[in-house]
Length: 207
Image (cartoon, rainbow, N blue to C red; front, side):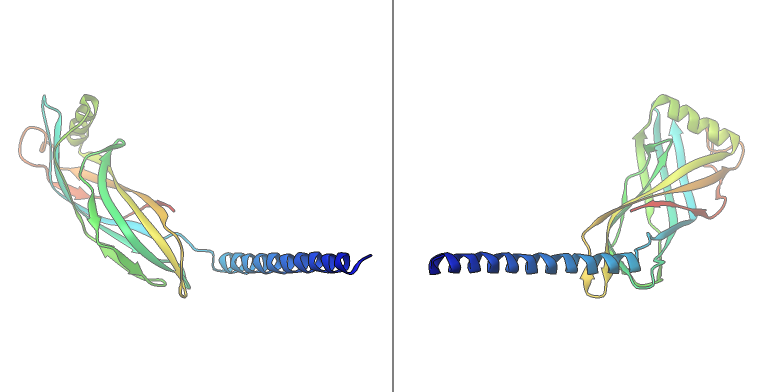
């Protein structure tokens, strides 16, 4: 074997050794990240609908237009001991039978530390929102019966913070049932109804 062939063989072995070392280093880093992630295991925030105050809720006939004004109070808790949460975008709106009935209200971006609790109280407005005829009829019937179930929807984007490391964005989506009671005999063709929020509700959260 010539000296040139020997040098070529040594160079090939050295290249393979360097490649194996780099690959091993990458695998080690990924393993460490996986272990840290499994140990910390971010838990999605806990969200509760604490109150819903309705100052206007009227369906016009036969146009089938809904006008409503609500103020909702929502609390969110970060249950993680070592992970903070950046709420970069949070939009809140009301829906009835899967149809959005108010415009989305934006909550200013904020950071939530470990085990912190934050409370939002956005106003939700909807003026002359067109609804399907069957929905308008269902709304009038619910008001006449004295009970109405709305859903407060939360749509946003969050990031996790562990030490100095910050994750990419994750989609936050939550649904909060709002059980409302109407004073019988009002709110259909007469005066605005007296509306009461029945109970604090736990929101379903997906991240």
